[in-house]
Length: 249
Image (cartoon, rainbow, N blue to C red):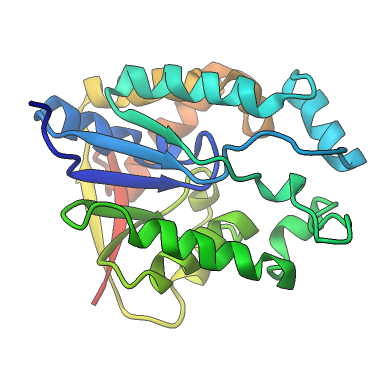
């Protein structure tokens, strides 16, 4: 009989958790813990694309059905870490539109601006889904470092679900300490570093490399990605490889 799911990570997009929590997941799986990664905005396309979304698809080297290709990347990455993927059929912000057909986030700048009022029903649906996850599971949710609208939406929904939460700071946005500080405003927090060994870091790097379509967004190549992941791990671990999580006091 399979073990109960003990650890559930909520990932706004198809790469966020591997980038931010891949080390901790590898440690947990290595210790025999069952881990599930729920990607919230992993749905397909329902209609036309904005020029902005088309430009992103071109940058990623993907066709119209980019979400399907990215789901395949996610399955490969999580298989390396030993985690189970769950993909919710909800569109990420660049694909969402209002009832009148107007796109909610049609530009790069909109991704970092206020949440659109038309996302109100989505927020309620997310809170319902998160609240229905197994009560015994530990839930890991994005802190909102960097301010991406989808990250803030998932955090707000998780908090509305009134569940005990452990927050992860999103890499690579968390490379900037100011992004983390801004996300921590308004509450008292306790940092929780999780220290990694070389095998775990290498597993994390290999998993992140599976998201080939996304690498060019942040790095010139895989070597630069690996270098930055290592440097960030040493930064948050005070000279030891680590990832950093946060609990509310």
